[in-house]
Amino acid sequence: MDQCSIVIRYVFHGTINEKLIAVKCVHNSSGKGMAELLKEELISVGLDLTKCIRNSTDGASNMRGVYNGFTSYLSKLSPEQVHVWCHSHVLNLVICDTTRNPVQVTSFFTLLNICAVFFKESYLRMDIWNEVSKTNSDNSRNKRLQTIGETRWSSKQTAVERIFGTFGVSKSSIYVDLIIAFTKVVQGEKFKPDIRAKANNYLDLLLQYETILTAHIFMNVFSITGPLSRYLQTSGLDLLKCQLMVKSALSQIVKYQRDMENIIAKSDTFVEWVNNQLELQDLDNAIYLQEQFEIKRLRKRKRMTDELLNDDPINDAKQKYTVEVHNQVMDRIVESMNSRFVNNSPLYMDLSLLSPVNFNSFKHGLPKTALKALSKNLI
Image 1 (tube, rainbow, N blue to C red):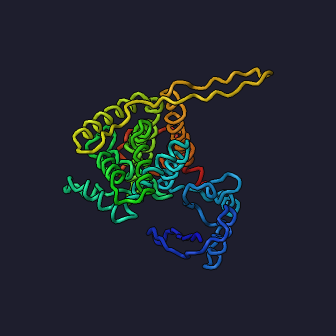
Image 2 (cartoon, rainbow, N blue to C red):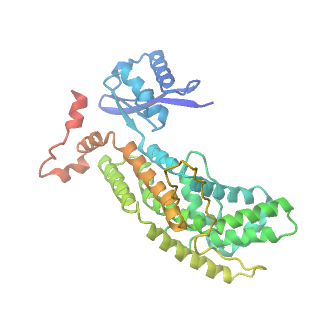
Image 3 (cartoon, one colour):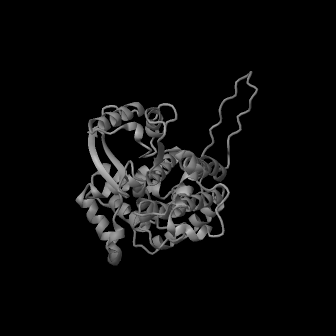
């Protein structure tokens, strides 16, 4: 059962204080249910909800819904309060939104998680992994396979970067080690047939060109969102810098929104490096990573006699992947960041003007729109 922590922040004699007043089981996680739970707890400790001026929650749909969200119901109970999202959690939701669709992306992250679980669930398979990966004992910490959590996108970034390295830097990856380990399991007669069959299936998926492309799409995205995420989780962050970093991250993602050629170029370099490394290995059977899109049989829909519309599917594999995977992923990130981060931007900018560390930035005068959002909430 879900639990809810209720923390109040208040000012007493000029000092900002925070106090945890309750940790409650949530029987109704709808926006209305959460608002009623908060109301009951505040009444129980003698606090007047109408005097609440701000509230902060994550950006989940039950919290941010315009009509039935927690914020909507709380605004009815306390009309003067302003809702502020936790930006770190919102960024987490942006990436989670992106990794749920299309199916090629969900399959990719499922594959990464399965690879980690496959070796960790058996000491015999783990021995194979340790034997293969011990060649770089000085970097043993980064040789660990990362399982993927359902809610924290940072585990997805770690899983991708552990296996494939960082964007444009192949040498830090453990991809070749993973291929060799799966190959040894497939060829190892001491393993059960079903285990060897599973390993062979995972190996085939890892060697697909589309897998490498999907990995590089997210390596590029994580190289932009990673620094932002780490800053949003620091204590004492500067609101102005926070807003500038959000805008900078969004502008960088927009810049790469249709740059599939860059992804292909980096992927081809990675493929070439991997194949060169695999040629140096002493394996019974030669193994190579696919260097181009696999040619698949096109399925044509039968046209009915009286049908006027003509079904015109995408025949080119590169164009099909670009439209159905790359563009969809990048568009979803841009749309999600725009919708989740823009609400209170003017208010954050006004509050940042009150910080002494930012006084030099407007020593020649304030912007024309300065403090308008803040004064609107105070009056």
